[in-house]
Amino acid sequence: MLTLPARLLSVPLAAVLVALVPAGSAPGSVERPPGAARPLAADLDGLWADARLTGAQVSALVTDPATGEVLYEHAPGALLLPASTQKTVTAAAALDLLGPDHRFRTDVLAAGTRSGATLDGDLVLLGGGDPTLLPADLDGLAAEVADSGVRSVTGGLVADATRYDDVPLGPNWAWDDQAAYYSPQISALTLTTDEDYDPGTVRLTVTPGSGAGRPATVRVTPAEAPVHVTGQIRTGPAGGERAVDVARRPGGNELVVSGSVPAGAEPGDEWIAVDRPALLAATVFATALARHGVTLAGPVTEGPAPRGAGALASHDSAPLSTLMIPFLKLSNNGIAEHLVKEIGKVRADEGSWAAGTDQVRAFLHGSGLEDGDARQVDGSGLSRHNLLSARRLAALLQFARRQSWFTPWYEALPVAGDTQRMVGGTLTNRLRGTVAEGRVHAKTGSMTGVDALTGYLERPGAGPLAFTVLVNNFAGDSPRPVIDAFVLRLAGDTSARPAAAGPADRTAGAAGAAGRTGHDWENACLTGARC
Image 1 (cartoon, rainbow, N blue to C red):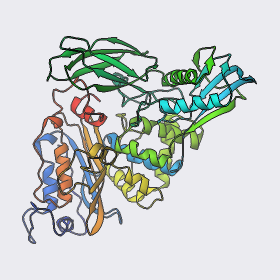
Image 2 (image 1 turned 90 degrees about the vertical axis):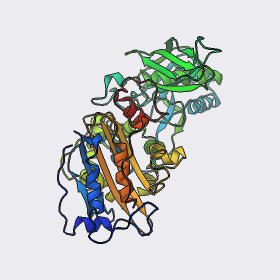
Image 3 (image 1 turned 120 degrees about the vertical axis):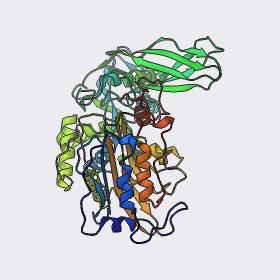
């Protein structure tokens, strides 16, 4: 492991860190008399000698977020891949630059002249960048069109996604992740299938056949999605492993399925990113129009709305403050990228990654959060061009507490060990049953060779601590137990040691593993070694 010595503080570091241990620590903690051989600082330093960190880079920083006082540091200025901890920056910038009440609007326009129930021209579905648009929302828009009196359209339906640029994938995103739901094409007009809000995706439900050897059935949601499923998934023996793979051929929407599911198993879901998500949304909307008695004579096409087109119907998303929950709790990449392009559109009249990240940098600079070099090229942290330091994340944790938007930002951070999915989020299964359960509000970040955690530790009877741990360039077992032990030591469990690697912590030899760890892309990346 590459290390730098801890900076000497004006107050002896051991004395500062011993003070972090709260009175009445949980069972298993050890009271250390003054001058004990291994104060907390030494134990924290000792964690980085774990064999799972051999050859890796580690950066860690603990501060008092009320004052900014540094309580512990280990290479805090190192520029490392932040993975999804970068979403804390994107979320803060979006709340500050767009405002907590910002909403995304989707409109239906009439491009032509009305004659009774007939529109002589086209309907336009105008995307407003909503990453949470559902088929039910499109159904509501179709009902509004019907209620307006339009029953027949002599033209077709135009999908307008021109609010954002036509660059669908972020800088340096992996080419072989293009079908992955966590790496969707970003479009101002898109669609999601459920309230996890993975934009630009369809869901495949795989149900075992009537017995071993029989083909499984594959159902696509939405049913009218312009995708074509080929291949076959077999039904294996009861009690066997589920091994399903879905690939999308580049440049189109042929979904190739393979693998097997055990006989008698419950149906399981796979989420797949599609090509041309604006066409997906428009196709589903055209079906909704037909369902409500509105007929289209022409096809579904893509392009800009003609000048002078008038509004027939509109749908507004939930406010940004509400969207923070699925964004940060579930580490939703699609929402992150929509926010960056929306920032660019609103603040610079250009819905692009370049314009959006320029505005994020301006926000950081204007807020005094630029303490040195860094690089942010997307919103989610998916690109391996991103570089952040623990010091910058610590500055954000301090700055955010003083802002009017702090409450929705803080409440959207995952809570350690909480079994409610939209509370615990990506920390649901971590630190459960420990002194840190319910007390850690933090953002996770994971990709192949990257694991990170940044956030707050609440202390009974004292102010919170802000902490960041970034680990890069490990190749074997995941160092996640080391990060968790670091947090437990801060929480007062002086006996905490990194747990031995379990199946969920192993990445070696897992490349190409089918499926995902639940609907959790970070764990899928960590265990599959493919992101």
